[in-house]
Length: 482
Image 1 (cartoon, helix red, strand yellow):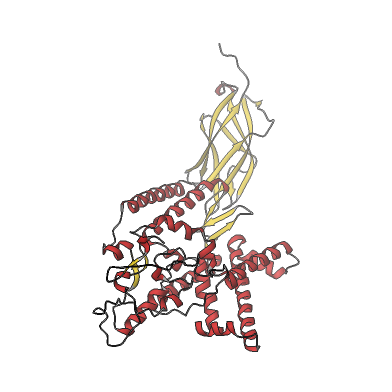
Image 2: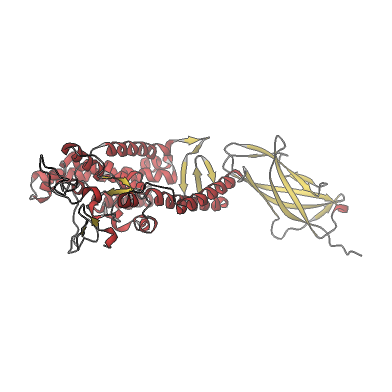
């Protein structure tokens, strides 16, 4: 760890952090997994995070059943190329819009990290919400808080341990199965998932096998791998090391105020003794879900969950010292008492983000409600009848709107053409569906001067509004120009 990451004590000396700190807080020096038994957090930030988690979980379980104009609120069906976002259908033709949305989201995450650090990890990340707000709470409910869990882990496999562990892991398995089924609702829709469940595993064996694999992955992640997803696997945790600087808001330990740390003694004048406000109670460590000591400085394993803030504030209140020894702050605020300011880098990211959001909004608004194509069948040519030259086209209409539409086809240029449909003069388009058919386009012979002439075809709704145009070519007899 660099000298900048060491702490300066109240008397000016440099207090070195550990000469060896485990590569991650959940690994011992030998490389063996060190199981983390965090103490159950409590406090105002924990209450806020619980409220956020409840709201997000409510959305997670409700969204598959919410429809907008008869469409799913969110459906990402890659296999069948069906995509619905906020009830709006998206098609492979709109992939560039989705790609633009994904790029915009990445820029937003970068800006968010530059300003607020890993607040996403501690407050919004699904891994954190599922682990801390569901699976970890089952740990506390069945096995008790930190000390009881550690005692149970050390004791022999007796009736109590077998019963508690079996019950806990069975509940973990059931929850993993439920989460998997809900995730599949975002892919194929809740009706399809319910149908698969009713038909049984043997009627849909491939789907059943996929369910089992994903359930096993969820179970492995939340029953055993847990916080190592954040400390070893998650790329965002590594990305933050590049994005965070001294002006980024993060969970920090105020070492200027806390050092020199020393055990609490009632009635002593700590300032006169040259002691800081940190009473070395270790509560910020035992409550950490990734097993780190926040007093060692900013670490990649810190997910900004604020559990250490609540634990430290509770201790500060008990000993009569001001809260905020561990708090949201910037490194400059801790080191130099410089207040937070919006840096040029943050402004640049914000400007880029605003431009991208504006461009994305333009693409969404300019996407149109339908898409029309008129393609000549392979090998077809023109025919002449009653002084008119006629070409046959196969049309494909994609209704992107959220309602059925009735459309008509007209020639825009040249404006003397005639359109004859294979059925009715007007075409009914079902919402979110592709409609195909054939159409004959005719021009008087005198209008066609070239063997291939450009024509523009328009599609209109019942009010006469132009919905889409398509440029193609019209074949006619070859004429020698003198």
